[in-house]
Length: 318
Image (cartoon, rainbow, N blue to C red; front, side, top):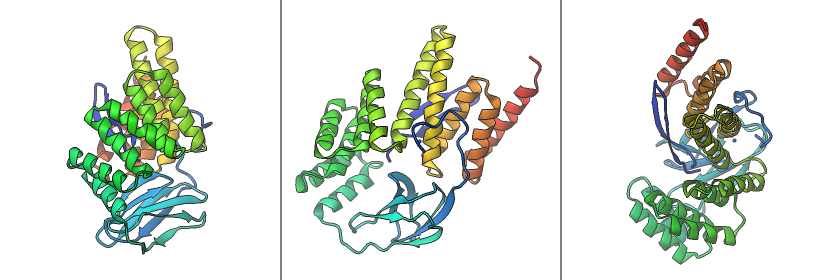
């Protein structure tokens, strides 16, 4: 999953991180996300391989080909591996899988896949080169859905919304695709068509059978924006109602993202929303879950300080 840029700001901190990539059924209520029943696995494959579980990107294997994923949801999951020079590989991850999961790609990538891999590598280095490589992949394989989605994301990041929409429409025509709908929802949101964005995000969630963290995140951000706009105009009922919706969707998002790096900013954003609503116990629970999943990250110290400050607020007289 690729991510959206998020800027969240209050008196204590500026959060500038990436999301929607830019969350375990759509019926989960707003609450602190759960971390029970999760399992830890270690992917063992080619060095520098990108690893996804259920479409959520968890990271890249080290120079020994290992990547620890400390928080995998229970049940059968879908594991996807992309190793440079090899064809992308997907396989089921059995419900009982724990510890080392060894996967050895064997099929060499064709020219279209090599172009796509090159484009993905360039997305954070040179966007124009990424666009050119996505186009090369599509020329070699016109029905390459993932390349059309990648091209749409790259156009969006360049601010070329018209071509982003064109690319995502092609991807949708080629194959019903929850990821394409999630990207389209973001494009609609960024274009100010909020009602259409909400409907599109919800279609993405339905197509993903409830699992679509990017769409849940998109809905959470949309309702967060609405809450802030309502609060700025003095509509405090609307502000709280929209914060409730934002928290509901972001809680699902972090639940589905597990220990993926994308979850870190969503946890902080969710905690901040609870703080603004003065739901201090819920905020502390969110931050404690963050520390359980990401204890050694650079953000851990700041999150610990958030908990300390909230507890001080709770002890202050009204």
